[in-house]
Length: 106
Image (cartoon, rainbow, N blue to C red; front, side, top):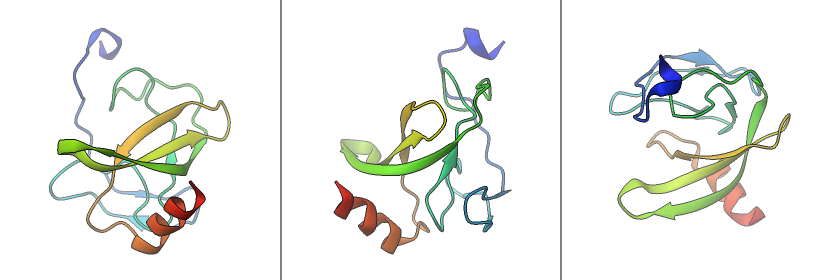
């Protein structure tokens, strides 16, 4: 059962963004967890990445950036429905203009 696990569950699927409607392709080198165009995500994981146990399913908007050594730049997402915050690694194909906008908001 996922709620007993402590390690990352690998799920790398394409999806249609619930915020901007963009078709988002899976990553080749890691797991895709946010839209490369608008950087929004969905609150689908509860305890560990990939568990898909959240009952919220709210839109998560990018509200900040944080640098984490080996992991590099991470986007701080905040759920607009329940307020939960979580970090997601940036991807090479992320919209750099949107990343700059987040940086200017901080």
